Length: 224
Ligand SMILES: N[C@@H](CCC(=O)N[C@@H](CS)C(=O)NCC(=O)O)C(=O)O
Image (tube, rainbow, N blue to C red):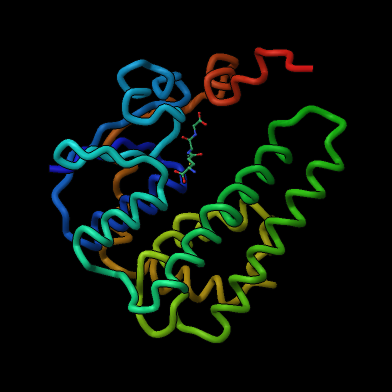
């Protein structure tokens, strides 16, 4: 039985989709990052990086969402591609580009103190650039690797649901192929089951000072 350490953020949600698509039995272990539970020793023993998601599969621990997708794909042989080069390249493109730039764009727009114009401009520009590359790819292909739905599409879907929040309410106007891809995956029964996890556990809703320090520990530290 897989233990799935999760919250409702984009990276855990792509793993929820993957577990549901593969029909793997799993138990949910909520980790409330606004309460600082990611910093507890028991969770740090699973992911020293103090982030969600992570899984423990019968003694094998895997953290980092895209590592988990690759692990589950290799374990089951499902939703993989014979084009290993493309599978790895696009998985890492999501891991190193889409996720971090989208996340930092949200952070600097919504959390950072002024002056922040330079940082907002850089991260929104880079997030848009990365999403534009995905849009061009999806203009040529139904799915990220062609006609077959793979773990790369799951990785993209984790974040594409958040595009209006990351880039602004009209962002899909410039990313119609990303929107079409999002809608196709969201219509899958496994996606509905993944999104229904929000009803399984009540995570802390308030973003109070304690939550801000738990999630953005640099706020409590002067490094320069
Ligand atoms: N590279 C990691 C990033 C994980 C990550 O940033 N997770 C966020 C949720 S999407 C988190 O746990 N945030 C809580 C925190 O930073 O304290 C992955 O893909 O799993």
